[in-house]
Each structure stands twice: as structure tokens, then as C-alpha cells.
Length: 488
Image (cartoon, rainbow, N blue to C red; front, side, top):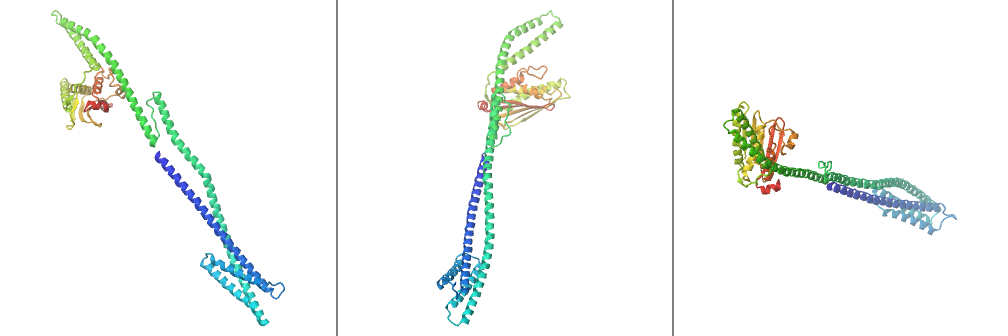
């Protein structure tokens, strides 16, 4: 937006300078042309005046020896004015052609003056005087014709230049009128553009703020660019973060409430179940019971053990023990856990699943550093995820474990992938919730415990799944939990 404003302001400034320059140039050019026209008109007037003086002298020559003739002083004055007018024409700047014509006119006027001088100064016989008078008259007529031709040419050129000057003036006037009308329209257009550029993004931000205030955390600002686009991106990111924080807070509250309920429930059930189990074992050990009744009691005891195991899981979820942090090798923890899974898979294959075995793959990064963690709790995290992966492949498949550095600095990453049936997207959203399970015999606490333990270590757990292709669980653990809690 700042770049656009700068471009618009610079463009308007340049346009203003160009218009101002054009106006100044037009005024200067028009003034210069008008000055030239005035000078040319003055020159034309001088030549007409010169023609008048020549005609007066020529008329006086015709009236010589009559009572209407001028006195000699007046005649000399007219001749002097005629010569001065011709000489003044040389003061102006002319091209070579005009200068040559002026010189010819000057020479003709000198010849005319000399002829007049002889007419008015000769005291010879009448025949010679008449001859000089005729000669002076012919020279005067030729001079008048020459001046008339020059005046006609001058007036024609002056008319053309005058029309050209007025056309240029009218064109400049029209351009200035257009600029006068366009300038307010341009200013209004720029003002409207500035107004829309500011008000529309601000309205979008205000609308988003109002939506956020009403609790609509899924609302996003779209269609904004430049600096307002950055504000929109920041707002959208804030909304996403706020939604995630609120979701985590709600989950934390649910965890606390369910943990308290589970803890109370486990304590309330533990003592009666223990008594029932002991009583059933005593009855089973009685010698006079037949085999059928002993078998029923043994089944009851096994079900009680299942309930005890569930109570233990509830206590582990409700009040997990505080982690005992030590520098450990994440790859070693993976190896130890993987050994347990290898035994489980071999046992499963031995019991009748030989045709569809599970292939186990380890891809461990040997360059990852030691990690400060609780090895037993991390092993519990990995064991739960590995067991889920094995259960997801009843017909066999490939189970892969990878260790590497996480994209976030200061974290290590473990990926556990299977090629099982995958997880439905709706189930994936709730998979880490307590008591939610997609298994028929699942308690729904395994993945909830995984997330609880990962959170205790300041890490994150996530999954990617495609139905029919398999699932990948990703666990990111901080190298140092004290720093990881702040970054996670």
C-alpha cells in the first residue's frame, strides 16, 4: 500500500510539474508570438507611413509650379521621414531575402532623392528641367510600386502568422480548459481511491474483530493485499492460534476433570475388586470343587485382572508420575521398545498368522544428540503407538520406525508408520480423547496417556492417516524439556 501511495503521489507531482511547465511554456510562447505580431504590425504601419510620404512627395512633384505645391521645407521633411523610415527597417532582424529587398528599396529611395534634388535645384533650361521632372516621376512611381508589393507581401505573411498565432492560442486555451476541468476530476478520483483503499480493508478488519468477539474463531479475512494483507494474515494466524489455545485449554480442563473422576473411581473400585479377587482365588483352591466350577472361577478371576489393569491405566492417566529426567539416547530407547514388539510379532506369527507376517523396519538417524528425558515414560509412549500399529495390521504389513531431527530447532522426532487400514478423518479428530476408541476391546486410554506423557515432556504428538493406506504418528520431543515447553 505504501508503494502505491508513493507511486500515486509521485505521479501526481510529475503530472502537476508537467502541467505547470506546459502552462508556463504556453504563456511564454503566446507572449512571444504576440510581441512578434505587435512588432510586425508596427513595421507594417511604418511601411504604410513611408508609402504615404512617398505618395505625398510624388503628388507635390505633380503640383510643382502650381499654387497647390508645398513649400520646399515641407518637401524636404517628407523626403527625410521617408529615408528615415527605410533606414529604421534595417534595425529589425530579417532573413537574407528580406534584407536584400530592403537594400534595393533603400537604393531606389536614394535614387529618388537624388532625382528630386536635381528637380528642385537645377536652374537650367526648361527642356532639361522637364526631363528631370519626368525622370523623378517615373522613379517615384516605381518606388511606390515596389513599396506596395512589399506591403502586400508583408500584410499577407502577417495575416498568415496572425491566424497561426490565434489558432495556437485557441488550442492552448482549449488545453488549459480541459486541464481545468480534468484536475478536479482527477483529484476526486484519487480521493475516492484513497478512501476505498483505506475504508474497505479497515471494514474487513472491524468485521473480523466483531466475528472474533462473538466467538467465531473460524472466520478469516480474505482479499486484502499489501500492508493490509499482512495485517489480515496476522489476524488469521492469531485466530488460528487462539482457536488452538482454547481447544488445548478445553482439553486440559477435560483432562483434569476426567483425571479426578478416574482417580476417585479407581480408588473406590480397587478395594472391593481386590477383595472379590482374593475370595475367588480361595474358593478356586478348595479341593472339593469339580473342574467345571474351577474353570468358571478362573474365568471370573481373569476378568477381575482385566478390571485391575483398567484401574491401573486410569490411575496412570489421572496422576502420571513426575518424569525423572536424565540424558538418554533416543535411539537406544527405540531399540529397547522395538525388541518388545519383535517378540510380540514373533509370538503372533507362531500362533497362526504365518501367511501375513508384519515386517519391522528401523530407520534411525545415528547423528541425533542425546536427549534429556524420562526413558521409561518415552518407552511407554512408543510402546502404546507400536501396539496400535500392530493392531491396525491384522492381515500383516510393514511397521516402520524413524528417528530424526525435527524441523523445529531443539527438537527430535520419531515417526511410527503402518500400512494398515488407516483412520477415518472424523475419528482422527477425537483419537486422543480419553475413553474414545475405534477398537472393539479398546479402553480408549492408550493414546490419551500418550498425549498426556508427551505434554508433560513439553513435546507434541500428531498423526497423518489415509484410509486403506496406513497411518503415521509423529512424536516431537525437546532435547531439553525446560526449553521445549516454551517452543512447543
